[in-house]
Length: 546
Image (cartoon, rainbow, N blue to C red):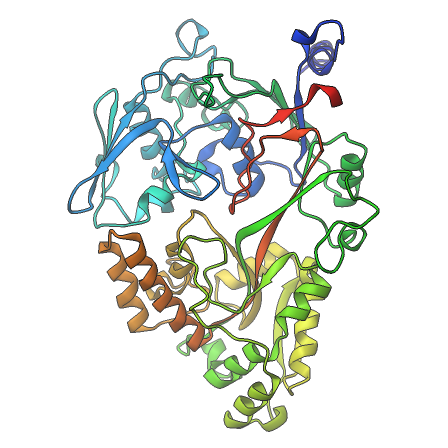
């Protein structure tokens, strides 16, 4: 963009944000957010991190979506039905959904989204030439592109190889957004910065690392209960301030309307140890917290066929169980997280997930039991037990050093290794480390997503079974869930599997995370969901505070 165009853009943006008291109808509302990490793409085929998901959720739609209770509800598909054998999904589409305008449509006007667009969009996800990070959604569930068909413009079908009960939940992922073939094929890889969807906001401008602007889609199809067309906001403006303290100061100065999470560097300034807003900030903004589908844990490599495990004391079950009993999670949450999270006393499936149950018994704090198990394993008070390395990243150093101190008190000596996030992920993904800090954030709102981490067929390199866990009873129950249509029956099987995992201890569940959302007092209509999915189509920004 040359200097003249950039100047014109700035003038237009100023006009958009201007507030004229003598002409209320000209008030324009701009929602200001900050994305701490730069985006690599706005193409939903590469929608792999939180901030990309947030922005793609404004620009694109899929067949279905989730509400704040994590229930699957209609989106472009107004209704659907599933065959008796659970293999054929038939979606009946709305006929009033249009793509955003783009010069590469006939006449530059966005056309209607039809079933053939979903055939193209989903086929693109599994195309090796595209190399989408979302190919896993369909790759092991269908037999090639022929699994997607469009008998007519308003009917779309997907045929699976075998039943998969959480399939509808999986389709709520932003990877499954619909895109227009002619526009995607014109831009090619540059579709990443020229996104065209059917969502409530349309792409306007992106100067990478500095600013992004989305404008209201005046032709958006969704309406509120009073028949008013969504969205209410006129624009969304995103900044890219990497420093969390700086972004918080911008929020306090009301230059940002929303802030996600509270960094540890200033958490004590904002929150008491019990998780309440301190007197300093009381009433200055809205603080929302709720369960977040994110399990924070320590992973333990348990596949004794691996050379790295053969000499590791962690291959002994009683030592893994001793580690679980040694950690005072309650104290950890209060003093290191200001009570922003729930101690991990149940299973791997987090609080807030449909099907979560406290009937799954994890590990409470019991140092005497830990010492007893250590002695039974042949290492009384840790005598002759080799030092164990525990890997983490800089951001979680204090948390892991707390765990280190807890283990030291029962006689288990650990060496905390601090590494970069990318390096740790690579080590874990190659079974290159015995004991590591990790987190599992839900890709879709179903407990299967968490239990798949322990399915033996998902061992490295075929899937995310990073601990090398292998249990026949678990696998049999996991495969049984494919054929169960009733949610409560399926959840009961999930709980049985989760209990097996807890008893075998390939992980130490530390806590279930909480979302922490800060909004300015003049913002209403925001969403509060366990996936921290940013939903702006119903947000209202009061003109009185502009």
